[in-house]
Image (cartoon, rainbow, N blue to C red; front, side):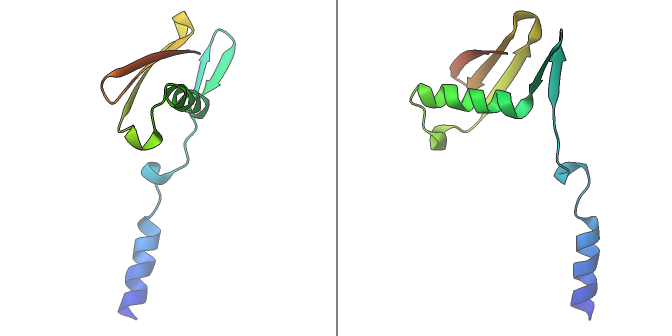
Length: 84
């Protein structure tokens, strides 16, 4: 009985902002770009450069709508740019 109560309490605390589904959309001068699309295109650009998925540890993304560009740095040294 005690185990079931603990499980029920744990299930009630699951959720909230950290686990909520999120959707980020960049809107600028009539264009809408979703975060997932941008990340997929960065992933493809890295793959096209011969970077294996397992080699990617971190990716920093800089969105510059005024330049219609997304700049990225993977693993602190691999730099690139994609169109927004």
